Image (cartoon, rainbow, N blue to C red; front, top):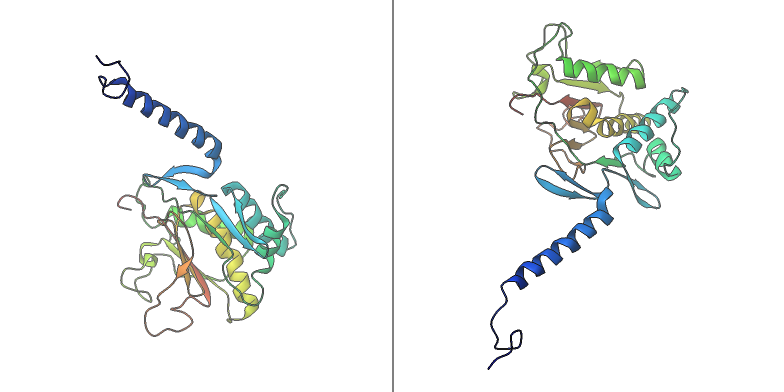
Length: 252
């Protein structure tokens, strides 16, 4: 005779179910503890802060609102204008965004990409930009003031860029920082960081500057090396201007 539950006894079919329930309970508890750093996106769970700033003391994580406030505050302060409240944001973050990396200009902030998939496709307006791109231009002007802009014109443009350029759709704006100097490169990165921090609100798709690019289609959102077409001059390498374009919508 065998004793139920002892080795050699009859199997208990409820044990695997109980084990699964216990495992799910443990996972639920872990997710609750980790909650703010774990989000769903692109069909996958994303781990980590929405935005990150590389400071001299190491990486500092920010949520999207903090990144928007920090980049806007730094941009307005540079113009001597009243800046939004930055309480709760590490001072090292503000210093790095304002001054850039020591030694050489370059990217300091990146944010996870989040490309909206339900936007309608838009046509050119009288400015030569789509309404989405025009909204972006107006937002930049509000924070950075009058800038040296190009890449669009009333009625649209059909030359001067690559065959598949978003400029021809009226979805792209170039912001020039000429000549190429250390000071202008740092000013360009100030704008580039602001665009990345506000990408979700402004439907930004790509930001290209200084041999680097950021994509809203990248869930990690890191800056990557930009492979410029030949000849690799200042314009094609985007050394003298920040390129920013918005999502097309429809078939994006």
